[in-house]
Image (cartoon, rainbow over all chains, first blue to last red; front, side, top):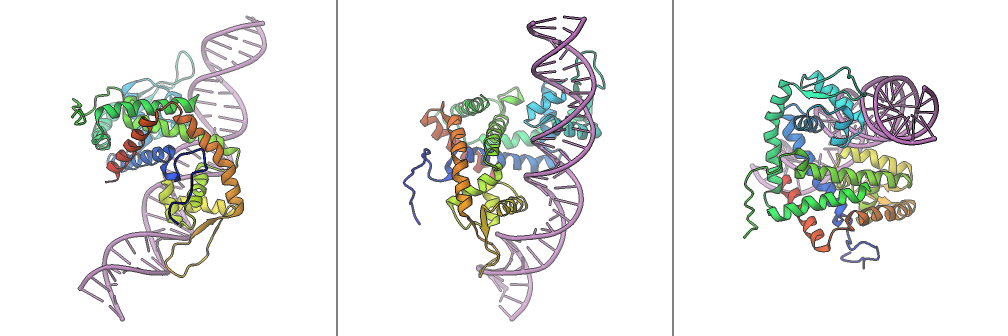
Length: 153
Length: 153
DNA sequence: CCTCGTATGTCAAAATGCTGACATGGAAGA
DNA sequence: TCTTCCATGTCAGCATTTTGACATACGAGG
């Protein structure tokens, strides 16, 4: 059963597992798994950590902003925020003088938790890219963006 | 020589959204979304389509094999297979003379459904990589694998 | 032969995420 | 002004996925 398939399809790859999409998903799954394991020691899930990072970078983001930033729906982000509020890691205004968006901010506890967890996550990313030359890493980032843009269009 | 990446700081990026992991997740999310939308017209979910592709490539894979191949747990794969069985797209042996793994095969309907959906998915992947030179695509694939391997270790 | 370790299938419960729907607040334009 | 459109927050229901646990099947070594 060796090497049949003379490639009749519009895709050069003979095996599905050779496709870009498959590799992309595989890498993403590996990263997710590593982060999941590391963050468990800090009492955080990946979406929770993502929200904390975004809020540290840009304080005052709204629920909808965080949903876009973490690639989930508003509803899912809402649940995540509820968990973070109950854990005392964030605070959210209950009203606003303009619009409906309610800004969210990190509490002191939230900042501490983020700093504690950040090291573990950064170490994972470091390990992930340690064998990739800087030049290729730049190309990789650009290509990832190119692909994302092509799909969003 | 420059392959030995100088890379001054452990993390050159000052913004979280500049990190490799973030871009990776973003691209993966965009692909997932596009596939979801396209596959809906064919009555398939992404995990279902993934299973069909794997089974077309390697008939007789078991539930656990498919779980590994689609990057989910055995339990999740089990649910997916149940749906595919009810839809008449696959068949699974109810017993085996050796071991516990029960081999799964595509039915004729499953093959037809896969062929119908495959075009839409391939078009998405085509669109995704159309603006990336062949040489960089090869590097991209290699780097994705390098990152995955570094995380699995 | 027997035990240990590993792999598999499966059940139950909980967590997570999404779709659909609705009301509210604001901006743009007739 | 008023009407229309879009973004936001939120509720309810459903689907998906994971964690945890258990029994079964096989191979490797004692």
